[in-house]
Length: 414
Image: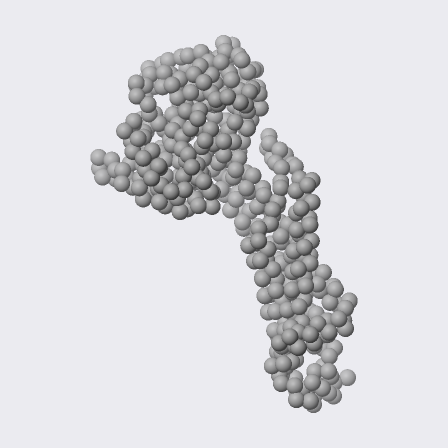
């Protein structure tokens, strides 16, 4: 085998210009593939991190039917206190969960004493919310980021309302809310901070302390509209979701039907569709890479066979078995793919390292996205094996043709 590869390497060196051109094309394909995968993966990770770390969490538990009417914030679908405790026990018994936050969501009227607008609010326990969505604190663009997220009597408001209503940190505002029975209640709050917007549902919500939310809604016992959950590792999402869903399935209503719903961030955020499109684009790039390698290697191998017909005839005439001739040309394809993959991976690693030293930044809506691409060992191995495999596959037809030549006809070739 090594002897055949040595002969293949010598043959490639004899036609070094063609070899360099083919290797260059394969290298370009590898670099384009790895850079696109790393950049697209970085963008997806940044966006998923923002959505899950600053708003949604990785999973959410709701009462059955809540998500279908989420825009109305239906207070009649709140989780009662006993159900909250049972769900928290199920969450604690599920491996892979790092933290959870009980949220009481409500709609209210927001007034600066001169103008009034509507606002969506989340009543939270500051410590639990901090553990579940640690990125929420980083969204505070005006106001202190240290200390509790909110204290009783304080309010975090979205940037859109702050600018539209000309409200600043430290200003006193009024919230007026209607509870489930139709009773109206109002309360004064001090604006503690202003939150920058992010893409997805919840990106324009405000936050207040749970005790304030209960007081606004005249609740005597704590209720919840959702329980947000954070995992130790996002790549365990499917396993944890299945495990927790099995536990929650035991909770039924009076009709014996499931009383709760469990949703991942993918089911709650429209960015999941964009993430799917990114994965689809990555697949298309892989197909283009395969096409580049196939065309490049097949072209050079066909030319190699055509230009060396008499040489092939000589090898066959002196008794070289067809399988050895076949191996000779397959070896050339293998070496071309191997060389192109190695050079492509090294160049890609160098470019990725450079992009981490000088990261790319670009606006995305009202945000500025910073890309810091990375390349995993699994992705490098996958792309390399794909390239090498396609190079070998592309060389099979020319190699088969060379191994089946009639020695007499080949020697007569001019």
